[in-house]
Amino acid sequence: MTGAPTSAGPTGDPAAGPAGNTAAGTAGNTAAGTAGNRAAGPVGVAIVGCGTVSHQYLPTLAGYPDDVRVVVCADLDVARAAEVAAKYGVPPATDVPAAITHPDVELVVNLTVPAAHDAVAADVIAAGRHVYNEKPLSLDRASGARMLDAAAAAGVRVGGAPDTFLAPGLANALRAVGDGTIGTPQSALLIMQSPGPESWHPSPEFLYQAGAGPLLDIGPYYLTALTAAFGPAARVVALGRRAFAERTIGSGPRAGTVFGVQVPTHVTALIEFAAGPVATLVMSFDSPLGRTGLLEITGTAATLALPDPNRHRDHGRILRLGDTAWTDLPVAPGDEDPHVARGLGVVEMARAIRAGVPHAASGERALHVLDLMLSIMESAERGEYVTVHSTFGPAAG
Ligand SMILES: NC(=O)c1ccc[n+]([C@@H]2O[C@H](COP(=O)([O-])OP(=O)(O)OC[C@H]3O[C@@H](n4cnc5c(N)ncnc54)[C@H](O)[C@@H]3O)[C@@H](O)[C@H]2O)c1
Image (cartoon, rainbow, N blue to C red; front, side, top):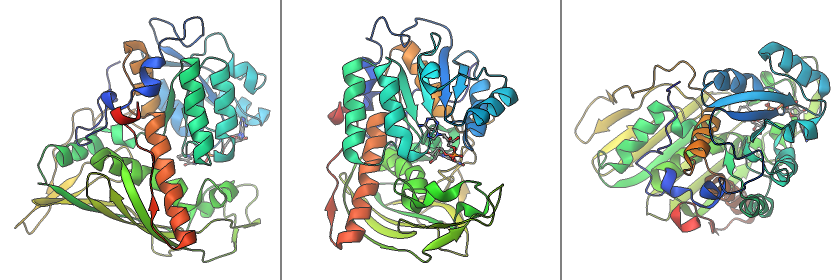
């Protein structure tokens, strides 16, 4: 099947795209002898973590049978894995290690909660398989860096969500940043405000613990898109607040259960990018007003309103200097593909593995976005600028 995920990152990113992801990329094709190195055919995939988001990935992956084949799924909760297996016609594994070492598995899609990302990824890498992680990559910089180092040593790849910057509409809008359409990029405004996810998520506790909160849970979509537009961030200054010490589950079998909030739930930050532009960010679970998907990039010649970076649909709009109304950007080729959704990055990674080229939703980029978010949290705690030391792209390779 031909389809939306292209290996090319948005051209708007000076460091994005295949050339921007060298470390884990090419190394991923050198580990002869592991299951991660078949020459042709769809890449065999294991799903580890059969919770809420697995119901988004499995239909996407089923839409690209020439590129990926989900051969097994697993979860610590065996009954949950069996339920997902029955629903999507994927055999369940007896346990997680059996899924990871399944002889037909080359790539493991790690859809566990953030606190488990590191340990699961470490087991996958030790088994000689490639790993694609949901966000955030890990809970802290050191374990994220260990993950990438271990993968490089094992000759396997690390990929990381989010993958929305590969969606045709967002990629097309990002291209307008890099190709001069908006003039010289100057600034960005990114806002996500909501009352929080506990109204709809049946197990929302992890979303209020280390590794989540509005910044680490939702920020990756906005910040990954911004790094695709501007390249790596250089320094940040931020403030944080927490409106409620406890929250109540609003749906599912545990509705009514009260749980504690362990992280700031309103974060506001200023970010300076190494290439010069600056961004203003608000990420909040403390707002009765729901306002999501506001991501605007301003250059000397125009302002660009990008599609919601937490979604895979829609196209951007542009307002040029002197205009009084927005103009829609053209619909991007591939936008009609009904399978374009969460999991696109796995398909793109599988294609890159077969083609022997670097993949776009790379571990390096995911680690930089994690570093940027942790720097924002540290700035909010300490009340001072924090320098962002990591980078991605050719310089990180
Ligand atoms: N829920 C969403 O809409 C959504 C959207 C995008 C991304 N994500 C990301 O996806 C990941 C999972 O989120 P979710 O909402 O599906 O969570 P969830 O709690 O619904 O599901 C997580 C699953 O992982 C399993 N698990 C936990 N530790 C494990 C381990 N060590 N080995 C195997 N299985 C393990 C749990 O039993 C559970 O079934 C998170 O990183 C989250 O940020 C979620």
